[in-house]
Image (cartoon, rainbow, N blue to C red):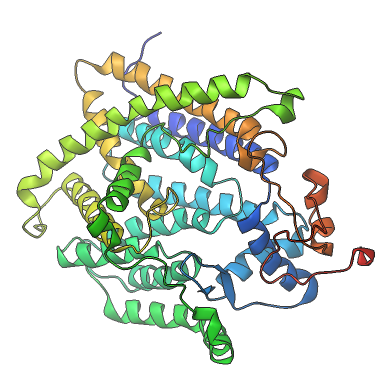
Length: 462
């Protein structure tokens, strides 16, 4: 088999083939997804709106105390439930966000990337086991991939001149992302740094209008906070600058920057158990889990070398602003550099230890160094080896995705570290959304957990 570099004619077909394969894998994962604590909290908000007409203007409880600001999560979760009363319905919106995000990124980056680099981006981003995992279950961070794509698209579109629509969309997206997850700060800080270094220009009227209209969605939340200040009460968990003081939280965040473009998924994702598939799994899940945790960390070498190459190439330029005559590739390299700088700043100031879901807003930027490095190698004498490596990478990604769908805790009901745990009460929501049909929960257990906004219902109301 020959592994030539894809041509301008064959590359689009390969990109669409990878896209179709990744979409099928995401759908397979979505169908098997289960709903645990965070998912039940989100579903409770959407269900109260769809079934009871009660729209809550705030989101899930935050790790630092209080509730997430704004009613966007209620809207995103509740709207699909009007059409399909199933606990997986809101996840269809998440997959739609991922799909739109990739299509927008591919359309934007093909102005800069060579045809074979588009194929690399499709494999390393769209077929990425991390992205596949985040695309297939209900969770706040999983919506953010689209916002990252809008950020890159709007910045590149305003490189030469400010444009009202792009500045409007970028500012509005920031305000909306603020209501979904605190990691929107990565994009906000990156925007400031990129604007400061003249990577894009701002149409201030458009930006102010977008921010103002986005802020209108926060009015119901503001009124709710006036009535109940406990909605913004802080639990004083951690302190700003914790990452700088203890160093480990910062290093952990930077490690995830590298892991996003590798096959080294988190231990939570690789906690395989195939009891649902086999009836019992005394050995297969453990063997595969051990193999993944021993072998796949070796793939960190690729993003490490790719980032090292990128920093060496761009180091002479980072102290000066982007010149107008700079190439599109130089612009893209600078975009990655300042997105990384934003991650360093945010991770340093974060009051809590960075977790694997807190950097997904810059996921696309974290993947690009490997795309650029592998793209250069694919033009060299090592082209055949790179072609074989890309095929092997895609095959392992597919194997990981199937293993996740059949054996990861988020996508199975039984086995080790299963998602179910005792719940304190009963609610019609569990029946109406098919939760008890796909994976029955132990209900009416004294001392059990319960979604924060869901009223308890006597068993005889069902």
